[in-house]
Image (cartoon, rainbow, N blue to C red; front, side, top):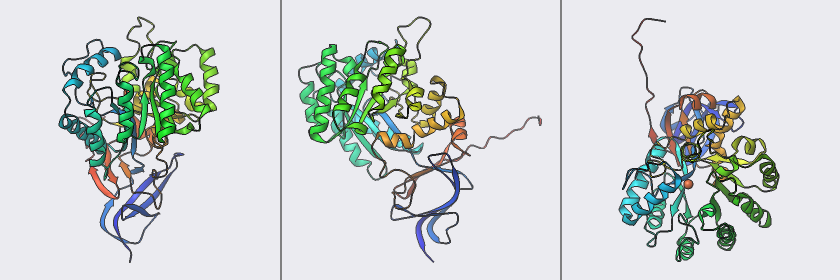
Amino acid sequence: MTSYDLLLRNGRLLHRNGTIAPVDIAVQGGAIAEISPHIPALAQQELDLQGQLVSPPFVESHIHLDSALTAGQPRWNQSGTLFEGIEIWRERKQNLSLEDVKSRALETLKQQAMQGVLFVRSHVDVSEAKLVALQALLEVREAVKNWMTLQIVAFPQDGIYGGDKNESLMEEAIARGVDVIGGIPHYELTREDGVKSVHRIFEWAEQHDRLIDIHCDEIDDDHSRFLEVMTACALRTDLGSRVTASHTTAFGSYNNAYAYKLLGFLQRTQINFVCNPLINITLQGRTDTYPKRRGLTRVKELWQQGMNVSLGHDCILDPWYSLGTGNMLDVAAMLVHVGQMTGSAEIDACYNMVTWQGAKTLHLEEQYGIAVGKPANLIVLDASDRFDALRRRAPVRYVVSRGKVLASTEVPSPQWYGEQP
Ligand code: FE2
């Protein structure tokens, strides 16, 4: 009789379209070897999933690991604004050391992995002259590669043209091997610098064969219109689905005439969008009195138009967001509320935004998903379906990474001692 490394019995396998099938899953040599309603085989390790939901892992499309776990250092962000956050980080990053960044990044990644996240895209601030954070994250990417796929984005927090050395620091970061080239056009000193920065990023990406992920229009200013520049650059290059626009919160403030024109242009591209609902519902709208804007991009409309949207935590315990746990179901649930995506198909779509659609943003589709021959990366949720997982922020019972059980969580079992209702 065949003997596998790992056999998962009695699971219910979730497919991208929401269908669920009863399965056994066999793993051999780190890859999925067999999926069938019943596998008559032995294994070195066998787990009875008792009908729990088997899903591909969560994908964290946007986080800043270099600043994670620094909330309150050197001081708390009292105004709650993006710009006070940038000022606080400018002070904190003067004291970065390799060990400081690495230990916080590793701890954050471990917390994420225990909650079912096995693919992470992290931005790293490369406006700091010694590039300490970059070096730390490059070392972390190597250190975690056996259990976590980490993509690194060169992120010029202070603008590519905001300081004399920033452009050359970006080039140094590209030379050292970042996966993705980032930007922040709405924080460049002038609109012209912002436009120039987007063009420069596309040139670098073509020249060095890298992905693009730009912090774009993360401001309530309805005149912040760098997404149209990204759209034009995407249309004029072959980069298409290799391009991601993160945040784009100004899109939520544009007048409808402009927004619908832009949506039409966007449909001709394959740009990915990343929305960060936890942080943008708290950061944006701070200069409004009432009515107060929600400060999110137009997720529902983008999704309805067939654009790829995925989600990020953005920050965990840092100068911009002093909360956060790394749980992607929290992120998706916040979008359900703030994006008013409460229709049943919309709630299911929000689940897909932290799984399959995240994999599309990260350009990982070849290695992502549960199918024979693919790397054995999967999670087991104590949930009946996507809606149930999201509503209850269902615990992740098991995390399997590269064919091995990486983490497990006991499901809470509350007891009732009162009268029977
Ligand atoms: Fe960000």
